Image 1 (cartoon, helix red, strand yellow):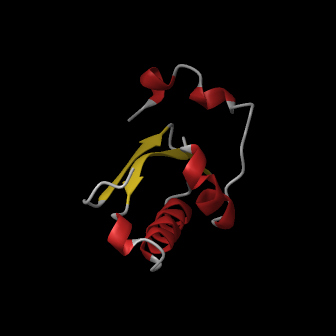
Image 2: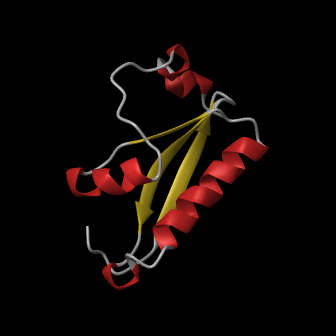
Image 3: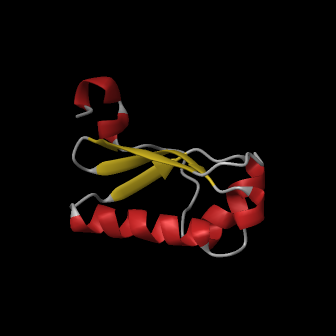
Length: 89
């Protein structure tokens, strides 16, 4: 964390979900709404394309950000995630 570059990458899986591979906002740009804007744009993109889920992994220090953005921790994954390599497009 704390890198000085922006990064935002995601992958669409099984025509039903997005996996957010990476989001990085440099320290000097944090707490200015940039991350929130990126997440809201991703949510809008998902809705526009009929994608029902957004999955991601999170570092512990970022969990509060994701909770504020409406994400919840899951312990069980939908069936389409199993064997994801054969389903990815």
